[in-house]
Length: 315
Ligand SMILES: Nc1nc2c(ncn2[C@@H]2O[C@H](COP(=O)(O)OP(=O)(O)OP(=O)(O)O)[C@@H](O)[C@H]2O)c(=O)[nH]1
Ligand SMILES: [Mg+2]
Image (cartoon, rainbow, N blue to C red; front, side, top):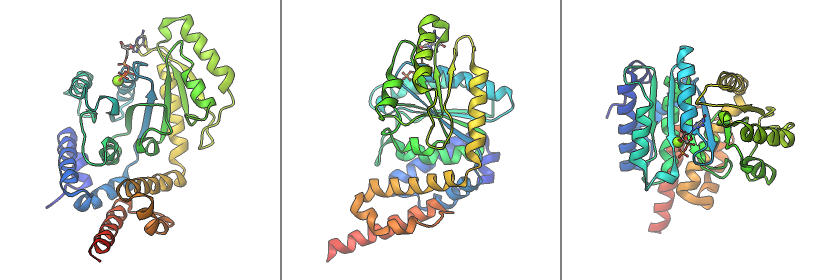
Protein backbone atom coordinates (compact mmCIF):
# COMPACT_ATOMS: atom_id res chain seq x y z
CA UNK A 1 0.00 0.00 0.00
CA UNK A 2 1.45 3.38 -0.99
CA UNK A 3 0.70 6.40 1.08
CA UNK A 4 0.66 9.94 -0.28
CA UNK A 5 3.78 12.03 0.45
CA UNK A 6 3.72 15.29 2.37
CA UNK A 7 4.54 17.16 -0.80
CA UNK A 8 1.76 15.54 -2.77
CA UNK A 9 -0.60 16.34 0.07
CA UNK A 10 0.43 19.99 0.05
CA UNK A 11 0.08 20.26 -3.70
CA UNK A 12 -3.10 18.22 -3.89
CA UNK A 13 -5.27 20.82 -2.20
CA UNK A 14 -8.57 20.17 -0.51
CA UNK A 15 -9.36 17.06 -2.51
CA UNK A 16 -6.10 15.38 -1.48
CA UNK A 17 -6.65 16.36 2.14
CA UNK A 18 -10.20 15.01 2.21
CA UNK A 19 -9.04 11.78 0.62
CA UNK A 20 -6.13 11.18 2.96
CA UNK A 21 -8.27 11.93 6.02
CA UNK A 22 -10.88 9.43 4.87
CA UNK A 23 -8.24 6.81 3.97
CA UNK A 24 -6.40 7.25 7.24
CA UNK A 25 -9.59 7.02 9.24
CA UNK A 26 -10.61 3.82 7.47
CA UNK A 27 -7.12 2.39 7.93
CA UNK A 28 -7.13 3.18 11.67
CA UNK A 29 -10.53 1.62 12.10
CA UNK A 30 -9.32 -1.51 10.32
CA UNK A 31 -5.83 -1.87 11.74
CA UNK A 32 -6.06 -0.10 15.09
CA UNK A 33 -2.65 1.58 14.70
CA UNK A 34 -1.01 4.15 12.44
CA UNK A 35 1.12 1.55 10.61
CA UNK A 36 2.01 2.64 7.07
CA UNK A 37 0.86 6.17 7.84
CA UNK A 38 3.58 6.60 10.50
CA UNK A 39 6.20 8.10 8.15
CA UNK A 40 3.69 10.55 6.62
CA UNK A 41 2.46 11.65 10.05
CA UNK A 42 6.04 12.08 11.28
CA UNK A 43 7.05 14.06 8.24
CA UNK A 44 4.00 16.29 8.61
CA UNK A 45 4.74 16.58 12.31
CA UNK A 46 8.31 17.74 11.74
CA UNK A 47 7.52 20.03 8.83
CA UNK A 48 4.21 21.35 10.09
CA UNK A 49 4.54 24.96 10.99
CA UNK A 50 0.89 25.93 11.08
CA UNK A 51 -0.50 27.27 14.31
CA UNK A 52 -3.20 25.15 15.93
CA UNK A 53 -5.64 27.27 17.91
CA UNK A 54 -8.26 25.72 20.16
CA UNK A 55 -11.52 27.60 20.76
CA UNK A 56 -13.38 26.42 23.78
CA UNK A 57 -16.41 27.66 25.64
CA UNK A 58 -19.96 26.71 26.56
CA UNK A 59 -22.52 25.66 23.95
CA UNK A 60 -23.91 28.62 22.06
CA UNK A 61 -21.22 31.08 23.12
CA UNK A 62 -20.44 31.77 19.48
CA UNK A 63 -17.47 29.50 18.66
CA UNK A 64 -18.58 28.60 15.14
CA UNK A 65 -19.51 32.15 14.23
CA UNK A 66 -16.23 33.45 15.57
CA UNK A 67 -14.01 30.86 13.91
CA UNK A 68 -15.85 31.56 10.65
CA UNK A 69 -15.04 35.24 11.00
CA UNK A 70 -11.38 34.59 11.86
CA UNK A 71 -11.13 32.28 8.87
CA UNK A 72 -12.17 35.19 6.67
CA UNK A 73 -9.74 37.62 8.33
CA UNK A 74 -6.75 35.30 8.00
CA UNK A 75 -7.68 34.49 4.42
CA UNK A 76 -7.64 38.23 3.71
CA UNK A 77 -4.07 38.22 5.05
CA UNK A 78 -3.28 35.55 2.48
CA UNK A 79 -2.95 32.73 4.99
CA UNK A 80 -4.26 29.23 4.44
CA UNK A 81 -6.84 28.34 7.07
CA UNK A 82 -8.50 25.12 8.21
CA UNK A 83 -11.34 24.87 10.71
CA UNK A 84 -12.14 21.64 12.51
CA UNK A 85 -15.08 21.15 14.84
CA UNK A 86 -14.54 18.49 17.44
CA UNK A 87 -17.78 18.18 19.26
CA UNK A 88 -18.20 15.15 21.49
CA UNK A 89 -21.67 16.25 22.57
CA UNK A 90 -23.10 15.94 19.11
CA UNK A 91 -21.49 12.59 18.41
CA UNK A 92 -24.78 10.83 18.72
CA UNK A 93 -27.21 13.58 17.92
CA UNK A 94 -26.54 16.42 15.58
CA UNK A 95 -23.45 15.13 13.83
CA UNK A 96 -24.76 15.40 10.32
CA UNK A 97 -26.51 18.64 11.08
CA UNK A 98 -23.29 20.13 12.38
CA UNK A 99 -21.56 18.93 9.24
CA UNK A 100 -24.12 20.81 7.16
CA UNK A 101 -23.73 23.95 9.21
CA UNK A 102 -19.98 23.74 8.80
CA UNK A 103 -20.20 23.32 5.06
CA UNK A 104 -22.30 26.44 4.81
CA UNK A 105 -19.35 28.41 6.10
CA UNK A 106 -16.91 27.26 3.44
CA UNK A 107 -16.36 28.79 0.07
CA UNK A 108 -16.06 25.80 -2.26
CA UNK A 109 -14.03 27.85 -4.73
CA UNK A 110 -11.43 28.87 -2.19
CA UNK A 111 -8.62 26.32 -2.42
CA UNK A 112 -6.97 27.59 0.74
CA UNK A 113 -9.73 27.24 3.26
CA UNK A 114 -10.82 23.88 4.58
CA UNK A 115 -13.68 23.26 6.98
CA UNK A 116 -14.43 19.89 8.43
CA UNK A 117 -16.56 18.51 11.22
CA UNK A 118 -15.26 15.52 13.10
CA UNK A 119 -18.42 15.37 15.15
CA UNK A 120 -20.17 12.46 13.50
CA UNK A 121 -17.20 10.15 13.83
CA UNK A 122 -17.21 7.46 16.38
CA UNK A 123 -14.84 4.55 16.39
CA UNK A 124 -12.49 2.72 18.66
CA UNK A 125 -10.60 5.04 20.93
CA UNK A 126 -13.18 7.77 20.68
CA UNK A 127 -13.49 10.96 18.81
CA UNK A 128 -10.26 12.67 19.71
CA UNK A 129 -8.33 9.60 18.61
CA UNK A 130 -8.69 10.65 15.02
CA UNK A 131 -8.74 14.39 15.61
CA UNK A 132 -5.07 14.43 16.58
CA UNK A 133 -3.98 12.73 13.39
CA UNK A 134 -6.13 15.10 11.38
CA UNK A 135 -4.53 18.08 13.12
CA UNK A 136 -1.04 16.82 12.32
CA UNK A 137 -1.85 16.57 8.61
CA UNK A 138 -3.66 19.89 8.57
CA UNK A 139 -0.92 21.83 10.32
CA UNK A 140 1.51 20.72 7.62
CA UNK A 141 -0.69 22.24 4.92
CA UNK A 142 -2.39 25.24 6.54
CA UNK A 143 -1.02 28.31 8.34
CA UNK A 144 -3.83 28.37 10.86
CA UNK A 145 -5.81 25.38 12.07
CA UNK A 146 -8.77 26.42 14.21
CA UNK A 147 -10.28 23.76 16.44
CA UNK A 148 -13.71 24.23 17.94
CA UNK A 149 -14.39 22.17 21.06
CA UNK A 150 -17.01 22.26 23.76
CA UNK A 151 -15.85 22.01 27.34
CA UNK A 152 -14.03 23.81 30.06
CA UNK A 153 -10.46 22.98 29.16
CA UNK A 154 -8.27 20.77 31.27
CA UNK A 155 -10.25 17.58 31.59
CA UNK A 156 -11.62 17.69 28.07
CA UNK A 157 -9.72 15.49 25.69
CA UNK A 158 -6.27 14.91 24.38
CA UNK A 159 -7.09 17.61 21.88
CA UNK A 160 -6.43 20.20 24.56
CA UNK A 161 -2.84 18.92 24.75
CA UNK A 162 -2.45 19.25 21.07
CA UNK A 163 -3.12 22.88 20.39
CA UNK A 164 -0.60 25.72 20.44
CA UNK A 165 -2.95 28.34 21.81
CA UNK A 166 -6.13 28.05 23.83
CA UNK A 167 -8.79 30.73 23.42
CA UNK A 168 -11.62 30.63 25.93
CA UNK A 169 -14.86 32.30 24.92
CA UNK A 170 -17.13 33.60 27.64
CA UNK A 171 -20.83 34.26 27.25
CA UNK A 172 -22.06 37.73 28.25
CA UNK A 173 -23.78 37.52 31.60
CA UNK A 174 -22.13 34.29 32.69
CA UNK A 175 -19.50 33.89 35.36
CA UNK A 176 -18.56 30.38 34.28
CA UNK A 177 -15.07 31.08 33.05
CA UNK A 178 -14.20 32.94 36.17
CA UNK A 179 -15.47 30.24 38.47
CA UNK A 180 -13.78 27.46 36.54
CA UNK A 181 -10.44 29.20 36.60
CA UNK A 182 -10.70 30.14 40.27
CA UNK A 183 -11.65 26.63 41.24
CA UNK A 184 -8.74 25.28 39.24
CA UNK A 185 -11.06 23.21 37.05
CA UNK A 186 -9.82 25.03 34.02
CA UNK A 187 -6.25 25.91 33.24
CA UNK A 188 -5.73 29.56 32.47
CA UNK A 189 -6.19 29.97 28.72
CA UNK A 190 -3.74 32.06 26.71
CA UNK A 191 -6.47 34.32 25.51
CA UNK A 192 -9.96 34.99 26.80
CA UNK A 193 -12.71 36.79 24.92
CA UNK A 194 -16.21 37.81 25.89
CA UNK A 195 -18.35 37.26 22.79
CA UNK A 196 -21.40 39.13 21.43
CA UNK A 197 -20.23 42.57 22.52
CA UNK A 198 -23.07 43.96 20.39
CA UNK A 199 -25.31 42.93 23.30
CA UNK A 200 -23.99 46.03 25.07
CA UNK A 201 -23.79 46.52 28.83
CA UNK A 202 -24.14 42.88 29.78
CA UNK A 203 -21.07 41.97 27.74
CA UNK A 204 -19.07 44.88 29.12
CA UNK A 205 -19.94 43.93 32.66
CA UNK A 206 -18.78 40.37 32.07
CA UNK A 207 -15.51 41.71 30.71
CA UNK A 208 -14.91 43.91 33.73
CA UNK A 209 -15.74 41.03 36.10
CA UNK A 210 -13.15 38.91 34.33
CA UNK A 211 -10.66 41.75 34.30
CA UNK A 212 -10.96 42.30 38.02
CA UNK A 213 -10.16 38.72 38.88
CA UNK A 214 -7.89 37.63 36.11
CA UNK A 215 -5.75 40.63 35.31
CA UNK A 216 -2.67 38.88 36.63
CA UNK A 217 -3.47 35.43 35.34
CA UNK A 218 -0.51 33.69 33.76
CA UNK A 219 -1.04 30.65 31.59
CA UNK A 220 1.04 27.50 31.79
CA UNK A 221 3.59 28.60 29.26
CA UNK A 222 4.25 31.91 31.07
CA UNK A 223 2.03 33.93 28.82
CA UNK A 224 0.06 36.76 30.44
CA UNK A 225 -3.52 36.09 29.49
CA UNK A 226 -5.08 38.79 27.37
CA UNK A 227 -8.75 39.69 27.60
CA UNK A 228 -10.90 40.81 24.70
CA UNK A 229 -14.40 41.97 24.01
CA UNK A 230 -15.52 40.89 20.56
CA UNK A 231 -18.49 40.65 18.28
CA UNK A 232 -18.30 38.25 15.37
CA UNK A 233 -21.53 39.82 14.09
CA UNK A 234 -20.25 43.36 13.82
CA UNK A 235 -16.55 42.50 13.57
CA UNK A 236 -15.69 44.70 16.54
CA UNK A 237 -12.53 43.63 18.37
CA UNK A 238 -11.90 40.79 15.92
CA UNK A 239 -8.73 42.23 14.43
CA UNK A 240 -7.22 42.65 17.92
CA UNK A 241 -8.17 39.11 18.83
CA UNK A 242 -6.58 37.82 15.64
CA UNK A 243 -3.37 39.71 16.41
CA UNK A 244 -3.28 38.41 19.98
CA UNK A 245 -3.52 34.85 18.66
CA UNK A 246 -0.75 35.51 16.15
CA UNK A 247 1.47 36.92 18.90
CA UNK A 248 0.96 33.98 21.18
CA UNK A 249 1.61 31.69 18.23
CA UNK A 250 4.96 33.32 17.56
CA UNK A 251 5.85 32.99 21.22
CA UNK A 252 4.94 29.34 21.46
CA UNK A 253 6.46 28.24 18.21
CA UNK A 254 9.88 29.34 19.34
CA UNK A 255 9.76 26.87 22.17
CA UNK A 256 11.19 23.48 21.34
CA UNK A 257 9.95 22.25 24.72
CA UNK A 258 6.37 22.89 23.65
CA UNK A 259 6.77 20.62 20.63
CA UNK A 260 8.59 17.96 22.63
CA UNK A 261 5.88 17.99 25.29
CA UNK A 262 3.18 17.74 22.64
CA UNK A 263 4.80 14.71 21.03
CA UNK A 264 5.33 13.01 24.37
CA UNK A 265 1.79 13.74 25.59
CA UNK A 266 0.37 12.42 22.37
CA UNK A 267 2.27 9.12 22.54
CA UNK A 268 1.59 8.76 26.24
CA UNK A 269 -2.10 9.54 25.89
CA UNK A 270 -2.59 7.00 23.13
CA UNK A 271 -0.68 4.25 24.95
CA UNK A 272 -2.55 4.92 28.17
CA UNK A 273 -5.86 4.74 26.35
CA UNK A 274 -4.92 1.46 24.69
CA UNK A 275 -3.00 -0.34 27.44
CA UNK A 276 -3.81 1.40 30.72
CA UNK A 277 -1.35 2.55 33.36
CA UNK A 278 0.16 -0.86 33.89
CA UNK A 279 0.86 -1.40 30.23
CA UNK A 280 2.24 2.07 29.75
CA UNK A 281 4.59 1.64 32.73
CA UNK A 282 6.53 -1.02 30.76
CA UNK A 283 7.56 1.47 28.11
CA UNK A 284 7.38 4.82 29.92
CA UNK A 285 11.19 5.15 30.02
CA UNK A 286 11.33 5.06 26.22
CA UNK A 287 9.71 8.49 26.17
CA UNK A 288 12.49 10.13 28.16
CA UNK A 289 14.39 11.03 25.01
CA UNK A 290 13.31 13.59 22.42
CA UNK A 291 10.80 12.00 20.07
CA UNK A 292 11.81 12.96 16.56
CA UNK A 293 9.43 10.46 14.98
CA UNK A 294 6.64 10.26 17.54
CA UNK A 295 4.16 8.43 15.33
CA UNK A 296 6.55 5.68 14.33
CA UNK A 297 7.58 5.43 17.96
CA UNK A 298 3.93 5.14 18.96
CA UNK A 299 3.47 2.40 16.42
CA UNK A 300 6.52 0.49 17.57
CA UNK A 301 5.54 0.67 21.24
CA UNK A 302 1.97 -0.34 20.37
CA UNK A 303 3.28 -3.43 18.59
CA UNK A 304 5.64 -4.30 21.43
CA UNK A 305 2.90 -3.99 24.03
CA UNK A 306 0.49 -6.01 21.94
CA UNK A 307 3.07 -8.78 21.57
CA UNK A 308 3.83 -8.62 25.24
CA UNK A 309 0.12 -8.92 26.05
CA UNK A 310 -0.48 -11.83 23.72
CA UNK A 311 2.54 -13.76 25.01
CA UNK A 312 1.24 -13.25 28.55
CA UNK A 313 -2.13 -14.57 27.50
CA UNK A 314 -0.56 -17.65 25.92
CA UNK A 315 1.65 -18.53 28.88
N1 LIG B 1 -25.61 39.01 18.98
C1 LIG B 1 -24.68 38.14 18.60
N2 LIG B 1 -25.02 36.85 18.42
C2 LIG B 1 -24.06 36.00 18.04
C3 LIG B 1 -22.72 36.41 17.80
N3 LIG B 1 -21.99 35.32 17.47
C4 LIG B 1 -22.84 34.28 17.48
N4 LIG B 1 -24.08 34.67 17.82
C5 LIG B 1 -25.28 33.83 17.91
O1 LIG B 1 -25.14 32.90 18.98
C6 LIG B 1 -25.73 31.66 18.62
C7 LIG B 1 -24.72 30.54 18.78
O2 LIG B 1 -23.64 30.76 17.87
P1 LIG B 1 -22.66 29.61 17.42
O3 LIG B 1 -21.56 30.26 16.66
O4 LIG B 1 -23.39 28.52 16.77
O5 LIG B 1 -22.15 29.13 18.85
P2 LIG B 1 -21.30 27.83 19.20
O6 LIG B 1 -20.53 28.15 20.41
O7 LIG B 1 -20.54 27.37 18.01
O8 LIG B 1 -22.44 26.79 19.53
P3 LIG B 1 -22.32 25.19 19.67
O9 LIG B 1 -21.43 24.70 18.55
O10 LIG B 1 -23.72 24.72 19.55
O11 LIG B 1 -21.73 24.95 21.02
C8 LIG B 1 -26.24 31.81 17.21
O12 LIG B 1 -27.61 32.08 17.26
C9 LIG B 1 -25.46 32.98 16.67
O13 LIG B 1 -26.16 33.68 15.68
C10 LIG B 1 -22.41 37.79 17.99
O14 LIG B 1 -21.27 38.26 17.80
N5 LIG B 1 -23.43 38.60 18.38
MG1 LIG C 1 -20.50 25.49 16.99
